[in-house]
Image 1 (cartoon, rainbow over the protein chains, first blue to last red):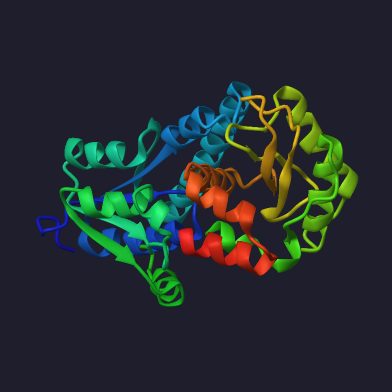
Image 2: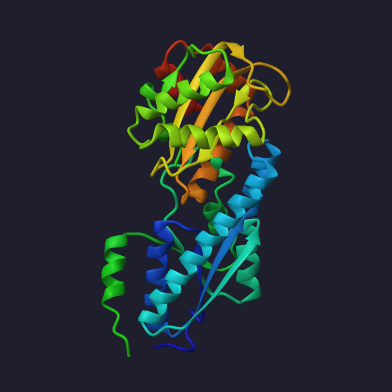
Length: 166
Length: 150
């Protein structure tokens, strides 16, 4: 354990994908190894919902309904990741908030003094039209801390399962 | 996930046969049924019509995006219909609709559903893309135009 090492605060970026669970398992393993403080953040993508209202695809009541669904998804994922961390004897702080995802995540990185942002694998092939709207990619580029993109779910799962609880 | 990942030649028609809103929606639904991902047609239809009753999904510039969340599907399901003549879909600008993107989503897939709808909004904001789709002479060509624009 390296309590004064280069990684003192790890933030897990949670976006409701399978990949973010893999990233969280790896982040938990890293926190166990380094003694770093662990945090997880889910941001309800309000800007995307607003974009759909502006395009007239959504009516207001749908926007509210989907915002509720996304919030519920976020709670579910954060609870699951909290359980994963606790199962390995790691304390974790979670936060669910709303906003422009990449901006909120980058703000929290600075506000919380995060040393390492851990996120799931980026989508392999993005369409040209979506490259500029992919929140994970924007976070990867904009975050003012080191970013770890976790790959290889099978290997990560084995690492996670091998963590011994003290 | 891209829109073209959810479409194939079987779920695209370049010549919708119906001329009324209900008929077009049912025709699109029948195309979407070919994916084998809809387990109850009547439940899916009810969800789409309930959404249409809130406000027509006929947007501006000839595009319509009938959509709904439904227990009738376990996965995102789409179909695309084109009418060269145009159909009265009670659109926002009062003009006939030519491009119809049907999207059905399971109740617990808000994230992917929203992303695909946003992709449709971005793609159809390009008038050249819409015009190319209207002029397409086959389902395969439609698919290639979408892939090219993505």
